[in-house]
Image (cartoon, rainbow, N blue to C red; front, side, top):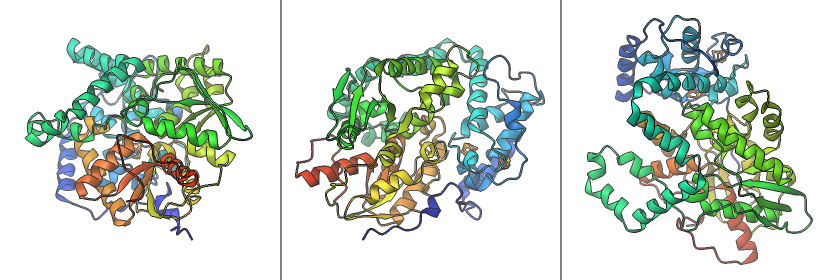
Amino acid sequence: MDQQVDGSAGHPEARYGGAGRMSDATVAAHEQAAAALADFVPAANGFSGRDVPADDIFNRCVRCGLCLPTCPTYVETMVETSSPRGRIALIKSVAEGQLDMLSPGFVHQMSECLDCRACEAVCPSGVEYGKLLEPARTQINRALEQQRGPVRNFVRHLLLHVLFGNLAVMRVVSRLLWLVQRLGLQAMVHKSGLARLLGMQQMIELAPRVSDKFFVARDQRWEAKGAKKATVFLHGGCIMATAFAEIDFATVRVLQRAGCEVLAPAAQGCCGAITVHAGDMDAGRELAKRNIDAFERSGADYYVINAAGCGSTLKEYGHLFHEDPEWHARAVRFSAKVRDVTEFLDQIGIDENLGRIETTVTYQEPCHLVHAQRITQAPRNLLRKIPGLTLVEMNESSLCCGSAGIYNVTQPEMSQRLMERKAKNAAATGASCCATANPGCQLQVQAGLRREGSTMSVRHVIELLDESYRIADAVPAPATSRGTPATR
Ligand code: SF4
Ligand code: SF4
């Protein structure tokens, strides 16, 4: 019988043991924070124009502090300004003209926040923290454009607009990275110490191993197996389609098997999560329009996504367009049809003719699934259906792993601390596999486990279901570039 330890440790209301962990790093963070207080200077620049953090949101905060123990940066630092309550107070101060938006301390806090939304999930006053942070970052970004200089603005434009704005460009860049990896150049740079010298060690360590075969949406239509329950639009994603393409292919197979006709319209694009989190809501809106339009034209019943971070952005297109009378209603209609693949499969029911996988699995909850979308049980329900699979809960399963989009690049130190904490919690379960539902988490947890010296594999929930079906059908595993079966 499957062993299921109660998931309370992973519930958003769980409290993390931050207090009492006053490591050297924590003490250093205290000192840094104290120094940073000097960086909060009186107002000169305030919020203005579009995308201003709304006062009816930050004024809902009654400063009760219930969110503090759920905040990864607070439990790591125990510093008020690194907590949700502290950050909300800072945003309010800028909005009320008491604090300069470009104060180094304010800019740092808006950047150090992971946008994990754990605070939002437990707030009794219903403070929608994400709707404060993303506009605040956008305001900072617009103001910094004047100061950054043309080269840095151009690099940012290349990344956010050209790379994420065009899946064909993403595939070309990914293929180049694939070549570098297959020629062994990445490993060589890493081992030679050059990566450390260039300050790129973590970036290289976390670079995804690019898939041999990409998932390219070309208006494919895959028939449902058995009686058809729904027609779904599959969002292939950008990172997912190139670095984890096998998960996209597995998603098609699992959806077909659940009775879905699957469409992959070529007109789709990146969801905009990275750009919105990076404080470029205008670029995010341009990407969103493309997906809304593609979905409306497709005739599909649902828009299904297998990456939690993208899913939460797609479900919030309504808010992204709340100041745009032309697109708002379309965006709200679109978001109402978006489903995370685990949520969707749990709702419509899967083919339960599953093969046996004798293994112990623990589940790492992606923040944007558990906190932003409040989906906790669906992935666990699916895992528990696999015969022979034992699900054991890790401590702090819903505490952010430190991936958070490009956070591991912008805030490497905090990202590493959270990565190590997550890897230790996962390894302590003794499981042979860590399941998750987001590519960023997959990379981060994998890197953390490697550093811990653990051989635990990290798989998407859908990969485990797909493997189970292959075992049931006695079909050999497809060749993948990753080669991390659940059973070792
Ligand atoms: S839980 Fe909500 S109301 Fe309480 S301090 Fe946090 S954000 Fe403010
Ligand atoms: S979003 Fe996450 S990191 Fe940011 S304040 Fe809330 S709990 Fe803390």
